[in-house]
Image (cartoon, rainbow, N blue to C red; front, side):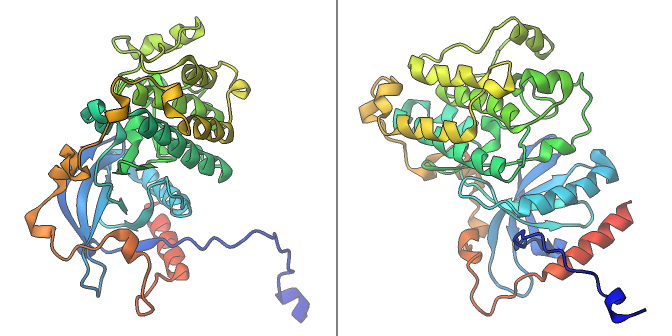
Length: 361
């Protein structure tokens, strides 16, 4: 063979290299502190991450894959982890790393105030129009980024938006619903597998999930915020939802919403997916409203609204342990490494994942 036959011809795609970092963590680096919740994929713990060879302790959330999802889901889960690690945006929860033994564990930034659904319910007497509309903007911005990266969330809801601070929220669990082995008749009113009450009709009937079906879920999510944690279609069995939607019924106008805000929601719930607004349009619309919040939301005592100290939320208090308050480092501080800190080798990461897939398959 000539030298030319031994070398693959160059066909550059022009695509920029994916420089996302995915850390492969040892189980000895993670300490589980307490259960934060249980979801469709498994259990989420508050944890402490002590990077090998370092003295820092970093508070994290650890999602442990349920054994009932099986090895097939585990391999797919790793593919999803690679995608999630590539997503970096101020309003998306960042994936820090994965632990492969004995069950897959996803490690993410710990959000100190829990999910937005619980937060609005707990603080409903102290949440004003500006904060609500800013949250609508932030969720739309995070979803617009996912659309630009061609990642469909599939399970957007207030329970899957986490609170870093009252003025900063982040979307979590983007793309995870795709990995669930769900039966089309397996309805769930409150979330988890087949969260019917947040789904567009084409998702329920045809399992067709797109960015425009995410827009439908966005409409339900902001309805949850505007009702301070109200339950969509409360009291109606999930199996009856498709027929109700086909007859033209929609969630009612929240008492605090002007017709302007409610019409944005209704547009998100159009049967024809192409008739729904795009996330780019929703960002622009809510940015405009957020500049004059009291024109669009009518809340008694709005001028006097003041959230209590961030440290007063029940979720925040539940996270506090005297034993691990010392020497903690915030993850965002840790992610700006000094020159001496070793970054994970991308080739090593790819090799570990490949070997794991071979073993699981």
